[in-house]
Length: 182
Image (cartoon, rainbow, N blue to C red; front, side, top):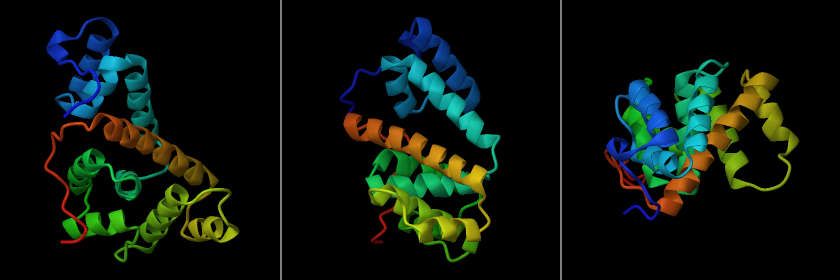
C-alpha cells in the first residue's frame, strides 16, 4: 500500500519520464521503489542510479555489495529491500543459505564477507564512533581505506532506500524474502 504519490512510467512527464526511461533501459522495468522516488524527486532517483554505477565500478564485488544490502536491510527491517536484494543476491552468486547468513551478519562460507557483514551490522546498529577493533577487523579481512569508504557509501545508499520503503510501505514487486525464523 503506497503512502506516497507514485505514478506509472506511462503517465510520467518531464524529469520523471526521463529518469524512468533510464531505469527501464537499465533494469528492463521500473521497480516500485524507484517509481516512488522518481515520481516525487526525479533528481534523487538520478542520484541513486549514479550511486549504483559508482559502486559497480569500485573496489567491491557485486556479491559484496549485495551482502551489504542484505545486512543493512535486515537491520532496518525493510521488507521491500530484503525481497529485492534476496533476488539480486541470488543473481550475484549467493545461495539461499548465504543470503540468510548475510542478513544475520554472519557469513561462515567466506571469512572476508563474514567480516564485511559484521562490520555493516555494527555500523548500522550502533551509535557514536566505531571502536578500534571494528576498524582493525575490517582491515584484517583485506579491506583498505578505499574499500571502507565505499562500504560506507553502499550502506548510506541502501539505508536511503530502506527509509523510503518504510515510509511508503512500498508494494513488493519481488517475491517476499524468507523469514530468518524458518
